[in-house]
Image: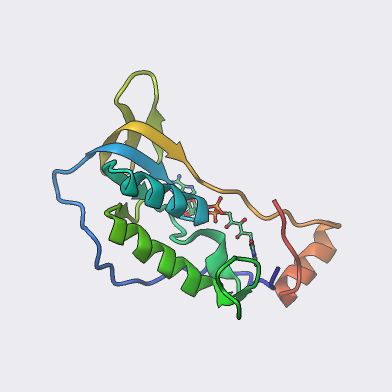
Length: 159
Ligand SMILES: Cc1cc2nc3c(=O)[nH]c(=O)nc-3n(C[C@H](O)[C@H](O)[C@H](O)COP(=O)(O)OP(=O)(O)OC[C@H]3O[C@@H](n4cnc5c(N)ncnc54)[C@H](O)[C@@H]3O)c2cc1C
């Protein structure tokens, strides 16, 4: 586990994967969230042939964009920087055919199929919806001590 900065980092990527057209709002699967869970779900769904959309919310890449070296992911003998790992996951998703839209889900309608996921400007439909919105890292100890440690960059997180 690595140290954290207080502020949020938003990945800036030049996407080369498929782009959503103005009209395309219907998908087999809509995934809400673009952290490791959302990207993993995207890779699996697209690879299985499902037309898949990821809505990434305000933090594309999820929590790992806010850390430095990730040492416990298999496949990286020398660790990998969190933001780099998440850019690679995003690219892998897009290579599989997942459409990624950097927008936030503000409402859902699961009363009947196809399910609906609403952003501020669009209404998406999916025969299935996967919610991968993650969690906030817990800050332990007293509020004052936690804030001091968090700002100095050495508090630890676990879900
Ligand atoms: C500082 C720090 C260091 C860490 N270091 C490590 C480490 O070294 N190794 C390790 O294994 N784990 C580490 N973790 C834990 C790891 O980051 C999490 O376990 C992991 O990110 C959880 O992935 P997730 O996809 O479930 O959720 P998250 O990464 O939390 O992603 C959630 C996603 O959901 C999106 N979202 C939320 N609401 C909406 C909405 N309404 N509409 C659309 N999208 C939405 C967000 O924008 C984000 O993209 C660290 C965490 C932190 C904070």
